[in-house]
Amino acid sequence: MPAAIEVAGLCKSFGSVTALDQLELTVPEGTVHGLLGPNGAGKTTTVRILSTLLRPDDGIAEVFGVDVRSDPRLVRSTIGLTGQYATLDELLTGRENLRMIGRLFRLSKSDSRARASELLERFDLAEAADRPAKTYSGGMRRRLDLAASLMARPRLIFLDEPTTGLDLRSRMEVWQIVRELVAEGTTVLLTTQYLEEADHLADSLSVIDQGKVIASGTPDELKAQVGQDWADITLIDSAAIEKTTKLLRERLGTEPVADLETMRVHAPLSDGNMLADLLHLLRDSGIAVGDVAVRRPTLDDVFLAVTGQPAEHKTDKQDTGKDGKRGWRPRP
Image (tube, rainbow, N blue to C red; front, side, top):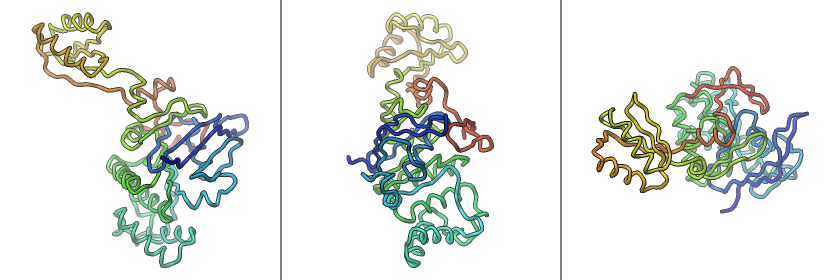
């Protein structure tokens, strides 16, 4: 599969602060690639360089084979960018905002009108199209901002924390839009602090820390690197917990984790057949099982394992929006 983005040895510093340190990144065309990492890891700096808003100090950064430094104008003709915060003229209507963007992309007046109407319908904004943008809700503003980034039909879209501050329903609407874009052949580079979002949308992921990619792969590949699946076995009789723990310890060779309050025993699974073997063992030993669930490692587990810290979640008030400074945002 051809690459939409190729990055090799990318470096960028701001004074004494190193934002990118020999960054390596490849994004296949027609996929969603997620960038994860703590605040200050270099995600936004990477997006700004690839979208020609910032010049790197060293290294190679290409978009569809075009170097972002040698031919930024050609790169801009193939990309769209939705930043962390909506960039709309609040005094203009939704329709006027889109038409203005179309004209800035040198579309004709008729093409701008037609494309704006098409996107307003697609993003469920037609009824509000002639209202000032300042009257829009947060979800509507975000959809309008996404629509603006699509006016010129870009082949690649940068989504830099696109669902910041949105409620769950609005987030899911944005997710659906992203899936539709990729189904049509658009490539998406997504940065997000919401690991659930990355798990839902990304075909592949890169975890960045201190300006370097420290882990990469599909979500399932990264989870597999972290550890095994676990079986959560709920017993009917709390008196059987000690016996269950002993049996599982002898069979697995590792120490299960017992929770007396919930009457659950958590046991690691080395392969797909192990769960059935354990359930047969308990049945043959006369131990009644009320429920069984398999828990896989999550991206939170991946994040913690590779960065040594839990995923950070910024607040709008504290976030500076700049690499090198940290903030927090509550989970939605």
